[in-house]
Image 1 (cartoon, rainbow, N blue to C red):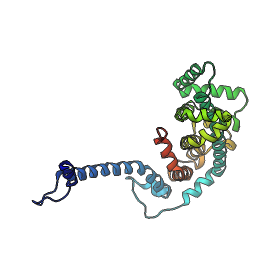
Image 2: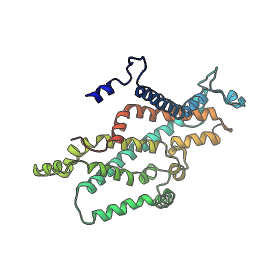
Image 3: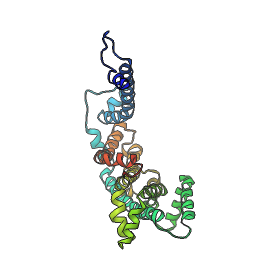
Image 4: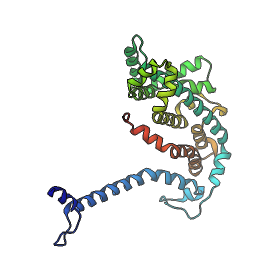
Length: 299
């Protein structure tokens, strides 16, 4: 009882007017913690601030700065107009949306099906096949890109949406992530479902997917971000404007959109391209955090 009383008295004034030292240490620790968090927030958010600031500076003002200015007294939206006029950025947005939606949807179907097969179904050589499957993660992306380029070219799919989409519809990492998540679902649920005569497909849609929804949403959002920011493969497999994505559009603005390097207009294009991803994160942030932090099922 005396120990509990001492703990309750921490931070309370004593008879001599002094305060228990435990409270001071806790306050100092909180100050340091929040200072480091604030410092980290500034480091993370500053590039976004600089991107937006540069996008509202005039071209002449930006190039006249010998020392970068951290604010502007004469903001302008002309850079956004220039970005859309220099290249068909709206068309690139539509291309990127088509590419992202189709690729993510097909990837989810393949990844969920493969993860369920590896986690619940029994078939000969399953462990060997999965080990070989995981070994594909050891192959450098450069080699995969070269192989995909040769394959797509031989199939005559260059400068086409199938050529853009096909190499991105499967991911070993996402299959592995979903498999590990599916295996955390108690076996008793699967056995009970089989006793009731439930098929594997029905069990997948009625039990597995609802339980693993946070992880599936996280995988989908990560894939959307990956597709939206894709640059190397679209740049390699397409050389016609009608199949360019937004990442190619920014490079096009830099190379020949103005006949010069117009950084403010480029930053304006980057701001416009980043807005959908920021909105996506804000809308699904709770699901993302739940999917990332989830380590198992609560019983």
